[in-house]
Amino acid sequence: MRFKSTNYTPLMLMAQTCALLGFACYAVVLTTLQDEWHLSNLQSGLIASAFFFGYMLMVPLATALTDRVDAKKIYLIGGLLATVGLLGMGLLADNFWTALIFMALNGAGLAGTYMPGLKILSDRIKTGELTRHIAFYTAFFGIGTGFSYLCSGWILDALGWRYVFGLIALGPFTAFLIVLLLIPALTHEKWHGPIHIRLRDIFPVDKWRLVLQDKTASGFIFGYTAHSIELFASRSWIVAFFGFCAIASGEPFLLTATTLAGVINFFGVPSSILGNEIALKIGRQKWICFVMLTSAIFGVALALSTGQSWWLIVSLAIGHAMFIMADSATLTAGLVVSAKEGVKGAAMGLHSLMGFGGGLLGPAIFGFVLDLTGSRTSQISWVWAYAAVVVWGILFVIYERRSGWVSKPLKGQINNHR
Image (cartoon, rainbow, N blue to C red; front, side, top):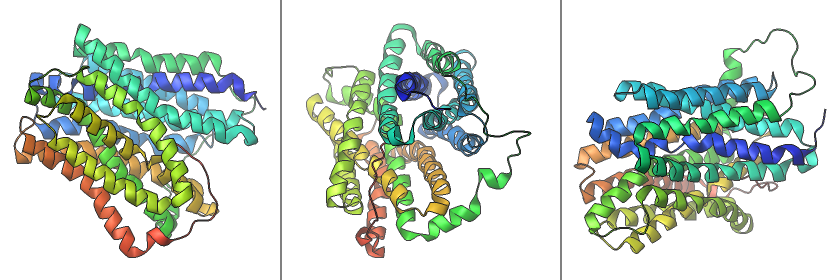
């Protein structure tokens, strides 16, 4: 059965924005919980990483199941998981260990909505129209996370941290209701009879090995991992960093730390799309290497700017956010172009898994280095922490340039934005 795509794409964009409202809740309340629960910076980073750990556990199963059943069913489970995780944080979490559990549930919920939501569209849209709708859907990731910072900050200021999680839980629950009530089920199930999911369906190691043997495709995957370490570490700690900057500079910022983080996050959406267009003209690998080196420079410069005027700090933060995202679509599109047809699906699964693996490592590395070099009240500690997450992009560029990856030609082009 085919549906008119115009009926369902706006609904899925709205659902995705709601589902992503829980993305930045913890980043916004990080310093509050750190003080209240007496957490180390490493523990604070590990709670942020637990979100990505939950995502990594869920996403292989969720993507495997969407080939067997209507993705709508997986989405509904994901929406409920995210709702439970956020409500658990708001109502029950009272220490490091309980926070790990509920943040992991929240991450698993996102895994059950993000890619299955894309599959809902692809199952209901005519093939010729699909690319445009996918581009909009994936670009809304940045919009949803931007609103997550804004809404979480407003609620924190007005009501306190428990209300942040409790009220934001309405977001994924609203996404659940949108899909449940407004997206029709497929007329015919894809699979009849009992569903048997084998371990090798969830973790296709043999296919992943073939993907990694393709040096061109594996370069994009490793690049995406390095990109994700920096991206998600920055997103997890940016509110705490702005809070330190406001104290160090001794002058108020134009906006609150959480509002600034949300606004800056929006700059990544056009940056990713425009970056891919530039890459089409000058070459994907060359663009990726340039962006990673520039992003590293902006990251360290941002850390060094503490104590300076707020306009300089914000300008550097915007530049860093834009260059972090400027190669995001290019890395994903490059993988799609370079992966061989027989293992393309497995390549995309590995790409997502390793990317969010980088998301798991980044916040924890950042917090560990803060502890190792002093604390979050020391400027030099912030410099070392930022350096610890941007260095992976530099190492990637050095290695891949020596291996000749930069000069490898790609066949065909594809636009694919996260």
